[in-house]
Length: 259
Length: 97
Image 1 (cartoon, each protein chain N blue to C red):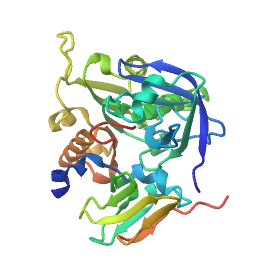
Image 2 (cartoon, chains in turn cyan, blue):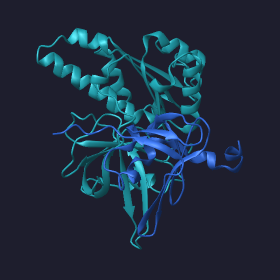
Image 3 (cartoon, one colour):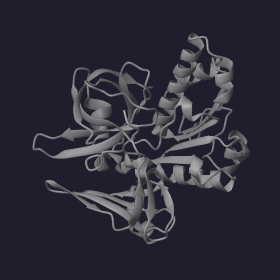
């Protein structure tokens, strides 16, 4: 079925980092989504010229509004408008949710290994937000919350340039602090502060061997980021013995435009 | 590889990236459909294939043998679909309501 184009309304805009901001949308008739899915956004110029890009959904299915987090790319055709110009109350044309391949929900199970480069964190954040909301709900209805958590332990390995470029930093810290089965590991490839004592290099096989579960644990792996990072990580994971079919990837292309 | 030399490598994406335009043709989500490459016979979920995005559309290639599995392009008021490279596409059936 053709996925309908809809006109959403920007409800709010939240700065995340100096280069990224989140657009919260009210979408009439939104059918709901699964964590990891994306939308296509279409901009139409006054002369009728149209540009279309895909952006991952950042919000959990449980959240009230659909959230997109956009990183500004200076040579981008669409992202400067979304990252700088769009204001609360503005309309935005989109269709979605799209794509059932790069999705995770509690029913898929764990362990869950997420590997992000830059704004590749966005669809993985939707998975972590969904996981937290679904586990909270399981606890609220008196279910075996502890058992559920042990079944879906999660680890996020996230490569960003600097501490200030870490999107959702405070929320990730909070989620990890309140959940002993969630580990968040950052690597900051261009951080100059001596206060940072964590990883400072690009994600490589040694880092993955240290952070990832062993292949025998059969984690579900989702990798999202710029194409070179995604391809290097996926190849290293397969070399370490992870099944290729369990390593799902979402590339944005080297410019990072989109998603 | 030739592709890397001529720069189109820059546009390499995943099968997921073609889901929007394919939804204009197909009822089910094709990213979870299993496609068999006519070139090498390997079967994968479409989301695991490689997509090369061009101005007019998408070329979907087999990550195993690099053959073109599917082409979908926008040509004026029409969508152009070429499935020569797909020997078979198996779509999960929608359970009856």
